Length: 382
Image (tube, rainbow, N blue to C red; front, side):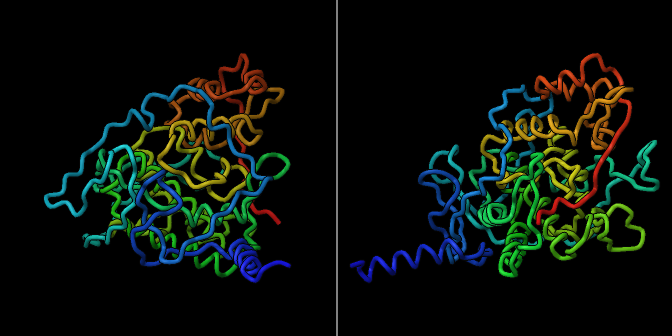
């Protein structure tokens, strides 16, 4: 006969497996799910259950051994942050990250400097525009290169594990229609947690993972707030929003600065890191976009993760197609051509750097790009 204690244990395990992703709350320092052996992490007062990603989710080959481009994450110069009265102490070896939640300090709340906008020359999308890479505020260049802090992204991991699946073509899709009210609240709590973090106390790698996850999680949050929709471009905060909510200045608020999604991408990430691979980490909730990663971005192995994301996208038919007249590529390589070298030859050389044998054949002998394409359909799964 099965003992009562064993029955209670089984019931507890089933409950944990079916419980929703829990949101961030004010908590205490304790051992948590991320950061490595012996690491102190800041976790919610109620521990979130751990989940395994669905078997249908296909991860990019993170061990892809392409060389890091000039200006990559590891080669970016840093600006040291040296507070007059540090509010933290380093613990243990500097190589071991420590997540310590720090109450945000008061900052001025003046308006953020808006990114400089330039038209998409020759774009078929009419009056649509993309931001030029221009730093929105010098405060976002500040970092602590010796910081052991790491941000806890376990709630975002949990939501991705529950709702992200990969279709037959390898496109990661999110089951927006199945996200529960509890998990939506958990996502909003996670976003509030991210926006309360003092990014100046993080090292460069931790900052970049922070911005990737904030952008992607807020994009999913926007879609959920407006679902059902066929495309994120249907979401408009004002009549003149031709390409969706990406210029909404109140999308997030970090260090007292209101930021749009375009501010995160083109006002912080692009000008600070100057790495073309960042475009493979940011997901705009569209079929034509690089995949939404099945796990939260972290500072560990960031270069190999970016190489893997580049490899995955470039070798998909969402990035490159070979026609009778030549090769066509995603409009990402038109909108952000300056990030990939500024001309067709530089873009093609970038693509070859991550191309597999099949893609190399598509690019063989090509010196010019013959056209562009992009699919703005929502990356939704049923």
